[in-house]
Image (cartoon, rainbow, N blue to C red; front, top):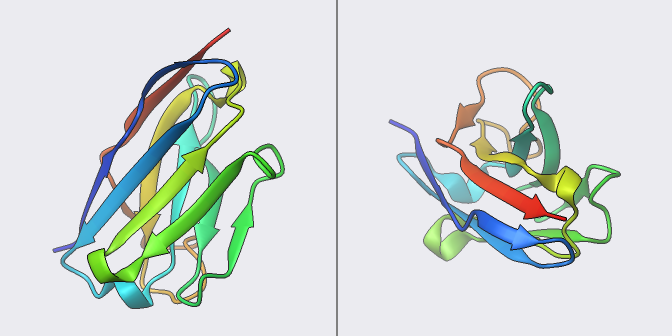
Length: 121
């Protein structure tokens, strides 16, 4: 059974930083793409960043230059370093993976339980 456990959310002032972590178990995560989505109240869930098996990354335009996704296959963990945070970054952040080496976009996505990030102005 796939399990994704996130940590690192919290409350931060605008301009601050947070790092999210997500540890995977139950799958050979070193060969899976992993990523982060977020969902703000009243909005659809959106892809924030993803990283492929070969560490190719891509980001939503709204976070480019501020967020960095990385992975450590030795501990089956993906990270999201968030800097220069803005109030509009406030959302529940979800870790995601699926049986693809390249992308977390598509069918049969596995989700974490979500972690709240709140950025105050």
